[in-house]
Image (tube, rainbow, N blue to C red; front, side, top):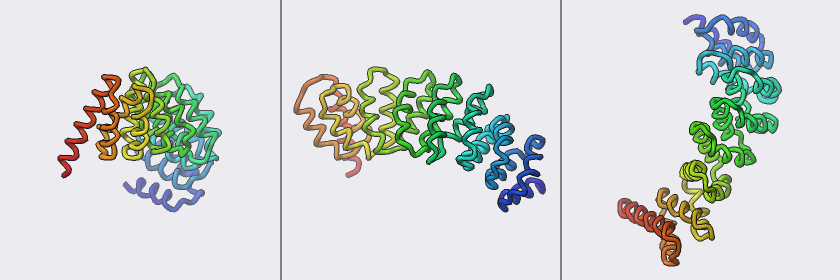
Length: 268
């Protein structure tokens, strides 16, 4: 307990002179490794980068790996070259940690581009880490790459990509609605999930798509409007029903209207 408190105190003080003593402890003290990594992250000394990659990202404990990824992300540009090099490491844990750190580095285009490349890594864990972290990148330019992941062989990767795409809110909605025209079931499912995660900012664009020429996009838009339960959709859905047309679309419209009617009755 005394050593743990001492390590925590060194991190809180933030003095770079504590870096080397902590680095000597890092590879030998497994019981304090999370605390050591956290302390090194608070200090932010670039001298710690190689050890954080070797013993942090390469650690057996997920808690250590996550703490190391956060510490390296916090070091920003100084850590980028070493993290990009780590994406070629044979250890998938290290590659995943590097992708996790790089994808969330706002304002670091090289880091974000490297995390996008990691979406093609052969290991599921690396692709998932990259997809999850890119939602924190602050760069809507990553959206097409995230949407391509909706068709990943791994549902975990696709789910992480959908959640990250939704983190961009209204900026992601046009591309996600475009994805509703795709004929691949997984693509349609995860695009719909991402729009559901976004919620209210998606309602007006979905209303517009409801009246568009593509019956599949209109059908999924109707379903999503019913799922979202926003009363703004009532009049456009009724108008779309009056126009008639594709039976599957009309079924989706009627289902959405029933759901909205129930929601309105319950809320009154």
